[in-house]
Length: 129
View (cartoon, rainbow, N blue to C red):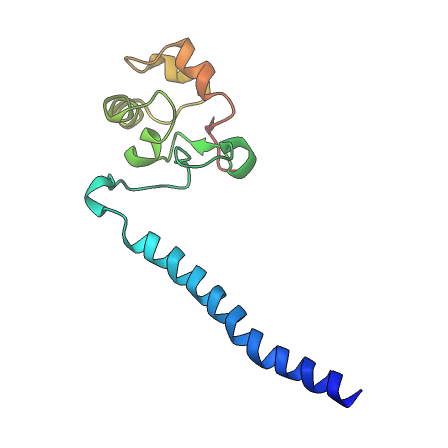
């Protein structure tokens, strides 16, 4: 019995460092992969809570709709179909005419039609929730 315990202790003493070493090597390899990314190839963009272009989860599952009466230009551009020009048009219309009463009021903004509003359904609101 004592011989078996000694063998087991010896086995653990020999193999434990090997197991830890292989785990450390795997972690180092993962870290080196992350640090060896070509940073010039990455486009730097500002991300908001509404920008899900790099996510595999849908916006509806994670975030509340964007209030178009208080949204910034950056937040508006994160919406599908809204670029910088349309975001500026929305803000300009909002500044000149006051708050949107319903989300369908976006039709009054130059360059935004019913198709865009349909695409944005569920992602925009006119009230704070």
